[in-house]
Figure 1 (cartoon, rainbow, N blue to C red):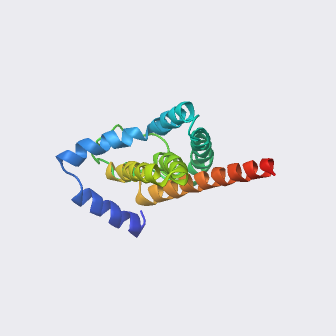
Figure 2: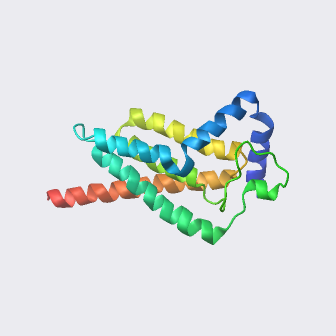
Figure 3: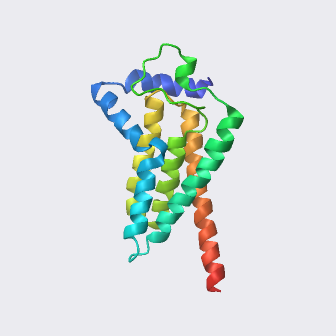
Length: 179
């Protein structure tokens, strides 16, 4: 474990655990499980966003999450093959069932920031709330000892970059079709 990860994890494990946070963060992390919350939100936006121009944002959320899945889960995790923190600390008590697969980058963080960044690019007010939720989901992964901080930072950055990429491509395509 690198010194940054060690310092941050030690600080979080020593200072943030209490009965309240130990009950809240497992729920928050489940919101990011397989991106289900964000997928459902994007589908809801697609269905309800017809009249107010949000339909495209729902589609872009899905596209950004799929791109993040392909790059993060299918490629990077299998290239880096980083064990999860609880594998490096046998006997660590987990508050959730131990996830399978590799640790880097965090898929929860990637999906959350991919979706939240698209929302932010569409509407700053709703986007700020979405980014706060994405940050809480990302933090929960470190809090729950299933990801290193650098896993979460990389996943968050990857998700945001995927959102920017699909939004840029969509805007460029719309502009070229309008010309």
